[in-house]
Image: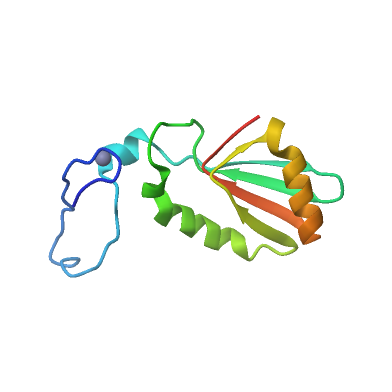
Length: 122
Ligand SMILES: [Zn+2]
C-alpha cells in the first residue's frame, strides 16, 4: 500500500488469525508516529450558547490532512450523539478570528456546538 502522506510503499504484517481481516489504513507507521493524533479540547461560552472545540493535532503540519479522514470520521461519530450539542466539522479554526462565526453558527442552530477540527489556533 502507498502511504498517503510520505508516498512510500508500506506493508501490513499479518498473522494466521488476521490473514483475511480487512483493515483500512492509509498511513504508514512512521507517519503515524511522526504526526501523532493528540486530542485536545477547549470549552468556552459564546453569547448565548456553549462551545467546545475539539482538535486532533497539537501542531499544524504541512501535510494533506485528508489522509486522516478515517480517524476524523471515527471521532466525529463519537461526538455526534452528545446531548444538547450540534456537531460542526471544520478543518482549521482560528479562535481569535472565527469566534464571531462560531457565535453565528450557534445562534443559527439554536444549540450548543462542538467544533471538530484538525488544529486550532488561539
Ligand atoms: Zn508515511
